[in-house]
Length: 277
Image 1 (cartoon, rainbow, N blue to C red):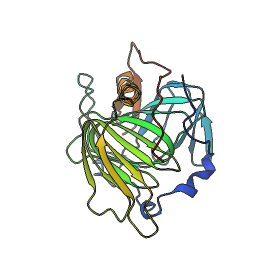
Image 2 (image 1 turned 90 degrees about the vertical axis):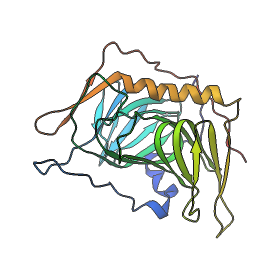
Image 3 (image 1 turned 60 degrees about the vertical axis):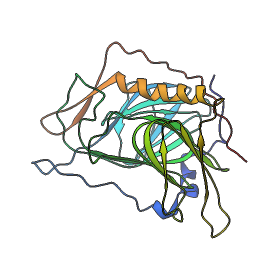
């Protein structure tokens, strides 16, 4: 089943929830190719059900399996009963829950030589910044190249994923960062100067603080009752990574080649617990 997790919001509502202290967090610059051209990162749609769309510039279009679109600046939204699995051209997979809005604030990738033999290693250094306006999504990375970064921004804080499997949930009450594999650092907004290191099996719950005070960040073990649904979502993101192979042609253009056979669920049974009130 695909339960409606969060109140619906349109693409135009994104600005109202923007994490203002990080709005200037633009694309990270990377080393240019010898020809002086930077790679243009792509996103490949591995699976979708119930409706999803993407806004790139002034264009809004429905997403279908095997769709490919530019990563930088893309605003991706699932319908109230929709799900979406997708893969960045650096090999990172993502699964979007129903009624979720995700914006790619920055995606840069260095030139790479494709290897069809090992999809568990990132092909080159990349820097990813995404903003979760509302909803929930799971992300699964390969082993990141030295120097790579993957940052998730939310209206209350941020999470720097150093590689692994992560589920992020956000609504008007608060948010959760659940780390199923790997390591990362959660930060509860601009007043949380130190941050909180998370290891596999831990969850950061972030709630709004009092006016002028830091947001409340609580670190705990993943509740056993929530674990099956969270693992199911992460499995969707991981499986998506195996559905496509990215190559770079002589001009520097990144192309997506679907892997055959493709065998991932098109509909996940995920029902994470409500955020604490």
